[in-house]
Length: 126
Image (tube, rainbow, N blue to C red; front, side, top):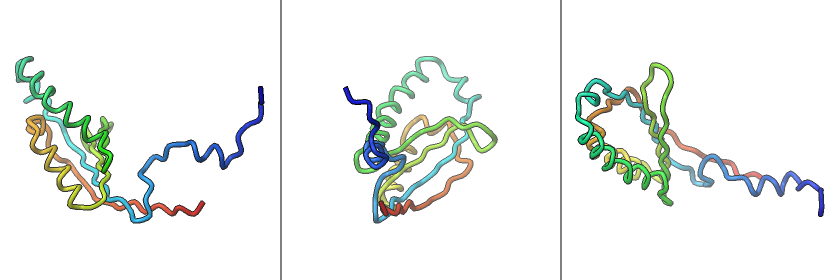
């Protein structure tokens, strides 16, 4: 049994990057939302379950989309309760992701607090 450690270059090739690797760049949309807790709590349990049941497969599909991933976070602080980050190849695809979320019944219970667009351009210098 060998106890040698892999060379740093070998270890680096097995790590999963935190962002999509691309030379052309990736378009990114960050959306921060405040959740309308009072309105949500006013719903009966069955209605809340139906709304969540509709949203979960859509959100999972967006997280696992091979053409552009979306990630969803709970926020701490005054900017909101939720943050959605969408990685796509173009602004048109970002708009489709934004519209996909807006079509969910769950979207009736959040309101945008802020959003911004950015482009990731990684230098693949190694």
